[in-house]
Length: 176
Image (cartoon, rainbow, N blue to C red; front, top):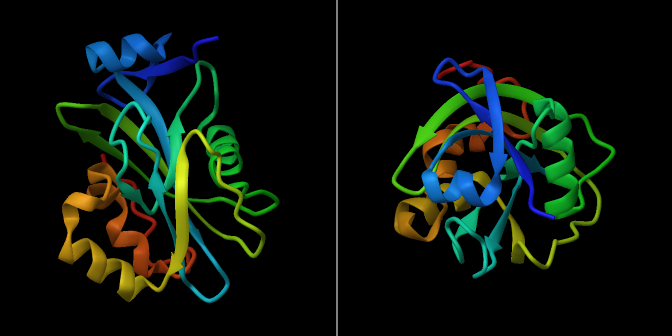
């Protein structure tokens, strides 16, 4: 059964719902979550998306996350996505901002979170090919060396959070 995605208006409020296929085909503005997963040493989990993803296939990403379902609260969606995508569970997800993103492929409002996870990462085979823990300076250098290898929305919206060391309070701005 196709996911029914929460649509959001330009003010960042829920404004309806639509099937995922329609959201993608018409580039409808929708809600998403983005979660930076840190380990206790301050490293960030970076994964490569599968070639079958409907947006940005095959690129590397340092945020777990995805679309909000119709009627779903952002914190619930973030917990669901972190678990589905990477097996992350049993941790506090700390909100660090709400930001807008738009390009020719997608338009959304993103509810951002950070967490510290000390468990085993389990990839969802339909979404994640591989992954690794990277020190913030390694990740920043990798993005600088080849920005085209990374999901552009994560680079634009969340790269400034990478040095946060798992949400140590570096950035809790609420930007749109």
